[in-house]
Amino acid sequence: MRSILRSIVKIGIPARSGPSLPRQLCTKVATVPTTPQHNALQRYEDDLQNEFHQILREERQSVLDPVADPMSLEVFPNTRPAFNFAAYVNKSPTLQQLVSLGVELHKLEKRKGIAQFVLGLDFDRDMWNHIRFLADVGVPAESLGEFLTKNPLIFKEDLGDLETRVNYLQSKRFLPEEISRIVRKNPFWLMLNTKRIDRRLGYFQKTFALEGSEVRALSTKQPRLITYNLEHVRKNTFTVQEEMGFEKEEVKQLLLSKPRIWMIKTEALQYRFEYLHRRMKLSHAELLQTPDLLLTRDVRIKQRHGFLKFLGKVQYDPKKELYIPLKSLVEGTDEEFVAEVAKSNMECYNRFLKTL
Image (cartoon, rainbow, N blue to C red):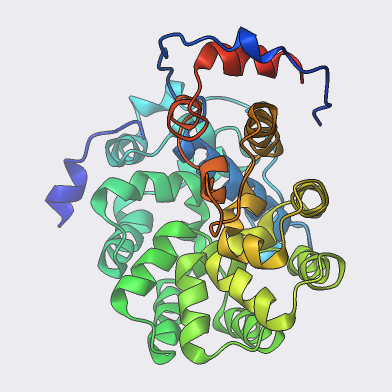
């Protein structure tokens, strides 16, 4: 195991309506493919970091003090580093080992106090057992660098406490593969003690009337939600149930199908629902069938729905002819949408976009 880990190499891991164009401008032209504009992995990393920042806002203390759980940690702002690791890598076996695991040192040095903390660690004495523990829990070797880049403070945690937290999940009938996913997808989960995790799981179970199996499914599907800022979760729950008008059973259905709805900004959720429900006239039932609409960027929905309306092809009722699936508003590239759904061409689409 040790030889395997040491041999790892670093890897990269609001619109307004305008005048309509004459439809005769939409002449057929060849579609020119373009590359996707958004990197899913980068979005995931940015979202995860922002969410952990919210967890850490409740209390503030030095990041180098003993840590009970992430709620008591100081936020890691992106401040200018006091120094960079480049001057130390050639002299530090510990940094060399971290680089071989794929840890991105340039990200660590931007966090207040973390560079000094890492430089004070010895790989064999302070890190090796933690890394072996993570591997045993199910973090694959190729993901260790990503995990440690996001949460180097795992090395501050007592191994006995970490084992207790994993044992707790086992006692709650989480399967090994579920525990592995939880730890991989939420590197900060193991920073919370069992009492806090138990309260969090109990909150979701009681608030949304979940069965034990549903609590496990939710935790495994979106483990970041369990450790997310509870004030924000409560605000979005109120918005979904009281302001958006979903019934309790529908709220539960939304939570289990798209738990990330509870982690997006409340204002964005409210605005998106208003557009989908008031402007597009989509019912609650239709939104429940395609909940990804509530997670899709407003501009994409407006552009695609607006283009279909411009072409006279808005027809989202599956019982009628010329049915357009709502999922087509959120899936695929613009080129695929224009050619396969709207049955038009990119020149026409681009001209339409200039009118918005």
